[in-house]
Length: 308
Image (cartoon, rainbow, N blue to C red; front, side):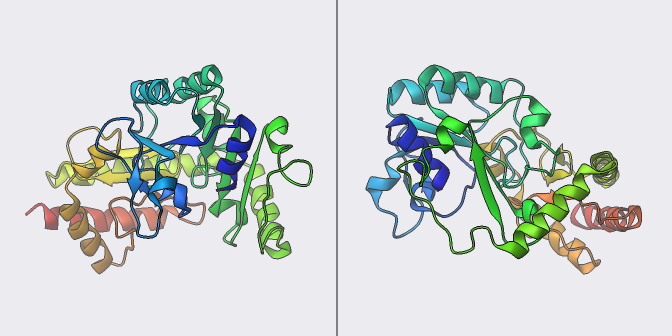
């Protein structure tokens, strides 16, 4: 919410672009759905959101740089910011295709718009420098949350100095929060980030996550169940489809009912995965190889059960 306010103040423009299937919180500007045409202004997806506010948000497909170019053409000189999860993880895990993030970076530079990366999920989870380190593309403003607090409620955003200087008291953009700088949460954050800076945390995460993803593929193959596993680092999703999954439309064509049955089968075997096909799976440093093997054993039985 504040990152968008900041971008609007900095650019003196009002509209923003977001991607279908990406979730960035429940502020009015972001509780929107795509309109009837490509790159058209969006419509509210929740009661209580004024159409006038929703109309300032343009919703386009994720991983479609041509749609982004078209949106900028249609809304010439009106786009303040492009807001995107660099690794989409709220429609399940959907990685960026080659060149997509660089394409958004170049577009924002040309059109003088602020590129905002929502790394609430990917930040510190796929690399110490997040998706920006992984893909070599830098955002103008970055939003962080979840993992940064080490389990405590905490969020943060930061960016280029000339943009951040727009914030009060240095600049005219207002921002406040009841829990801003909460000492317990920030202490947990510092402890977490210090742990992640030591040793081979990310190598361990990568090894465990690869083991889990490959095991899921093999278990599904043995049960003759078609799945597509999308994984970036410790983030992964198991989509029940035989086709690649690159955007929200692809996600919606997967077999959601089969996923629900798989969830129930896993739960009955003592493994609790997220109950929605739109949620990511997270492998953590706390997961042991024993945990992963137990999960894969349950998945083998689960796949065989739903494959009947």
